[in-house]
Length: 204
Image (cartoon, rainbow, N blue to C red; front, side, top):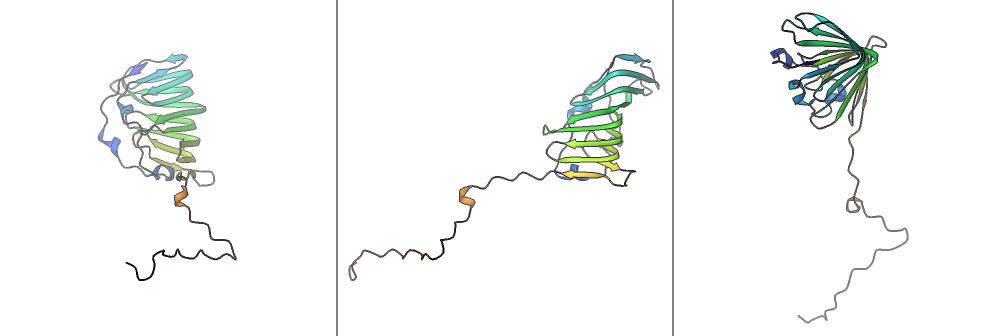
């Protein structure tokens, strides 16, 4: 099944609370993804692409839209009043989502359920949710909401009341010999005497 995306509503650009690891440095999800067709594959399909209906896909579900990819055991595809895919709810053990940002860095997320709102550019990961970004860190919580346009997130946790984050340090450039201070002279040695001029006194 392939659905061509339509124009996004103004609400898609609403402000999002930035969660730690994604605020470390500017990064945006692959901007061209939102304009790509959405492809949905599964072993079984039940339903019709009709206005305001829900179809069920089961067995090795794979959803692709540009570099964004989501997989799971089952998916509920929600069609809006224009028979366009509005959202897809994917469940699995766990369900998985990934996407490249504009710098080519991979984001990977896993959760018991992923609710991807295609028309509003965000995905809600619920149940032991984990989101990792290469070279930047990871976040864990009961619920993580990932913006597929800006790479920003919100998060919350019901267990210990904490959202857990790990930050990767920025790589440092290796020091060159010129950057290293000179080693001190060994104890008991004197500094060499200054060089004497070879000129004879009184001569120009």
